Length: 548
Image (cartoon, rainbow, N blue to C red; front, side, top):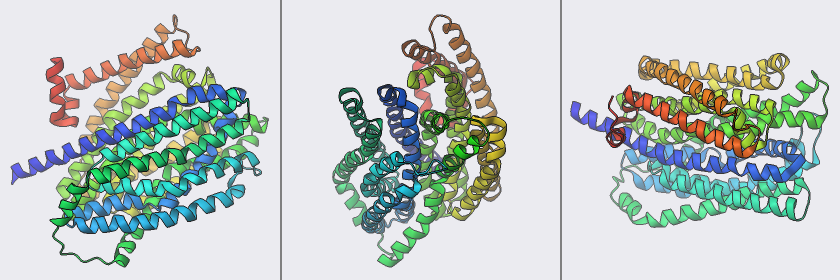
């Protein structure tokens, strides 16, 4: 029995690592593409770069909420419910769920797209009055909402099978097509036609629909290529459960509503900034409306776009963890639940903390690479890099609670964090000006994180002490890496100007390389990597002749 438990533990860890690897590839590759495009795009916008970014940030915050409403949290709910029925060997019900969900998604997509299009004038506000530019930009995103629900639910179906590769590949293809369209239209409008930056932003937002269409095409191909395998699983199901269409819709909706609220958590924190920063800062300093919009763009989009590259690590692990935890919860396997929570947290911390410290260390040259030299922008990115840890922890912990059907508790924690954010927003802006929203966000998220960890420790016997001990080692190595990277950056900065794009890029590459080598070597030599990554790391040890 002990041997069987150990085998199950290894299988679960390997499934999680494999799924995380695929989702990490999809998330990181698409995020990197989504960040790299900004270099030429921002340059082509010329003097309108920050204002164009502010228009994009405001429209995307609203768009994200509408995407969550239009998908109604159903992709995550489908993944969770499919995993539940698969664990019971009722694959036919999972397929039925998917087919019924597709119909629901198509309807919600049409309704949500129409609502966003027609209410854009009400939502296009910078805190004081409606902005016609913002209306047009928001409306250009409504077309994507027509088809993204179909894309999302199909990804959820594959994730319910713990098959993360189709989701990851479609994510990459979607982003690639989107970036190609954005760059092509921005170049033609701004450089060839010397047209309006607003028209360029509109086309850049329309790219979301173009990318989604390509993503759906790839997923349809995966469905057909796996049809025999999926048909076989359905044919050999137990077929003992009888679930009506009405029951399926009730199940979907019950699971979906919490997903909408919880998945919109980070966006809700951003919306507090979107609708309060402008009027609050305007009451404290004398500056033009466009100048305040420039400041908002520094943390609302510029820094945010870069830190979301590393926050996407958390998203990848979260997506992988939900179906695995749901399956263990369905079986009543609390030992597996505790182990899976530990695996998720350990791997998250092992990757996220050094990534955040590393980005903070190179905040000046990396900001120059993407946006040009800007001391204030670099400082905002520095603080934002550490905020990424809070955002990532929030993402992972909310996903764990969802996977364990603790939806109500997750919503309570989110509401409490948002209330705290709202209360602290003005005092923090008063004290720290442009950095205030980031400080308020961190404090609000910290409360959510601490409450969630305590609940998991008490309710599911999560070994918080073991994870804390590993956290100490990870943080120590990350601080060491930060100091070394900073030293390399400062030393090379005497010869390579961090305020010029090409030399700044060389600085980034060299500094990051040194940081990765130091952290990897330290983690391997102390057996920290082996404990967290499991047997899969042994190949690396053998290859490089490293022994703990």
